[in-house]
Image 1: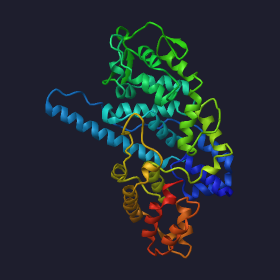
Image 2: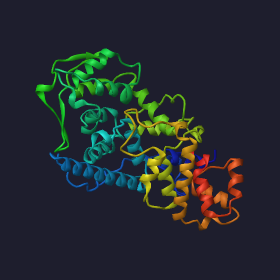
Image 3: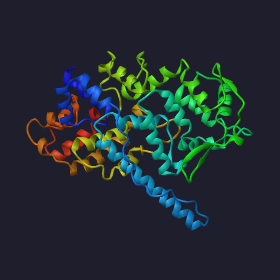
Image 4: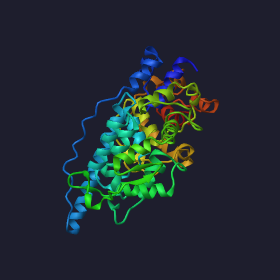
Length: 403
């Protein structure tokens, strides 16, 4: 792999899709300097103006008006976030999207753009650092509490949903805990309630089981001691590394990397000897595919929501607590046709002056940050004279769908 290919690979993995100018700049700066720049923590963005949190309605008409306002606020938040993804030249928003898929929480049940935005800001605030503060913050996160029925978890009727998913899907993985650990964890998390009017979670003492419980080889009495015990477990770091590797590295076992925080883990992943060999092994999720295309073509993400809905991945609406599928699940015949139709719409808005010469297939590869075309794809592209059709075919190609 040449230096240009290696740095392009780095940019493809850590961002939503590099432009040709960004690749050129990274080649000049070098791999290490580019990695440092991409992983430098960003300031919290100015949030969008969502308006006031809708007040509950009493009549049928009032409830319908509230639901309509909730949908409009969520649409505003999605459009704002997609714009952030397009504008970001670092690893920040892709990491935010990674955590969104990891701590998968859906607005379909939460029904509040304010709470979903608050969760995003938690990912931005804590997602680059040690996992301990992130786990503490997420266990207090109002959106996650509502999503996993934490507000129903009381000392008289413990609800195990949040405790189970925290250990199984978010921090430890299957086999690293017992059913007794789940039951004890649920007791440690009792009493947390969400005030939708203020958008905050608080501990209600009379609903909380204050008796210390034993789990995972230790004793805990509250949320913070529970979170701290979890991140000290031997299984925690390998689990997090495995999830990061699955989205930033490649399929198969993760390398044995270590680090004091998420930024250090990503740096270790991107400098491990096997990272370069993972090029061409990860299927882009629809958000990655679309945002990358919009960035590379210099467009605004207008009309992105219908495309993402058709492709099966809408931000703020993961299908389950397990998040979105990975890998070949996105490479169906239907999704290929959808990408082709979407590519045609994007190509109709793009500047294609650079795709008209005899070297148009190479120019297309440079534009889309594709290393090379297969013989089959190259033959199809070479036979295509119309530059907009050429661009649409490139966007729908296997080489662009897999990076």
